[in-house]
Length: 330
Image (cartoon, rainbow, N blue to C red; front, side, top):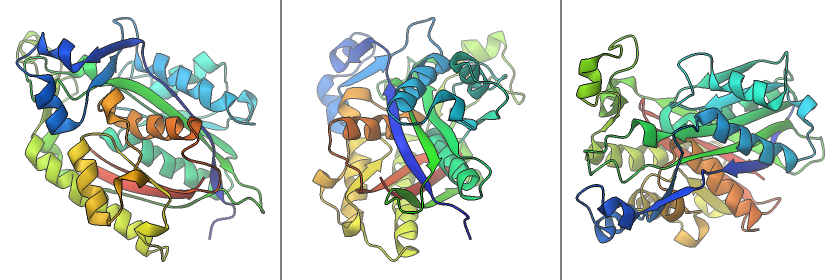
């Protein structure tokens, strides 16, 4: 039994200034605005500059989240960052963010779960808060996929953008309505070869050959990932609703990972949920991996779509393969 309830105190997000649209991509690869829109629902995405790294975006998102809450910087007990494109292999991006925020003597670490990284990190934070170890956990989802994109592959290079989103998972008061109801995370390592970055780790260290062969970029078997994403996000969503004796119709807003509009629409159809109850901003950001859900949630809160007391369901799918869902009353 949990000692306390955990809640989302606030959200924040940040995207780089540079905006690249489908017409810009037409000049880089053999593609078209119509082709991209029809297959993905994307039009614009944000790209980092050469001197911007994951910690830069993550820090700005964190500042927005903290300053949107009643939590003070000194009240942060732990930093968890979901990312696969950190500044370095080590130290962790979380430790770099910690330094930039001026925080000391608290734990900070990264979680690697592909596009599911933000939800995995929420699950970690929720458990720390519920067991009484921590009161306020800063959770960030950030990725800069444009820096590991294969610009000769027209099927993948049009998909990705850069961005970061953050939330503060805090201990809820006894009489507070806001709380994280449940979270569920899963993985299937046997299918990891459907979406991965081959080079750059200990299996295949950097060399002239790995660079020449574009092995430091994203490799994805799109059709198989598409089917797995729909099936897995539905499974985790169905699981979390069933074990809390709820149905999709009881949820005010579903915020799915923004990987492909057709995946989002197929998921809504399987859940028998109308699209006007699904938060979608893929047309403005593309796929920012761990950043998609917190960015979409933050925008929906700031535009007053999501209000305090609303039941929200977050669901994601990513490399690993990993997937999961979080159910909460915001």
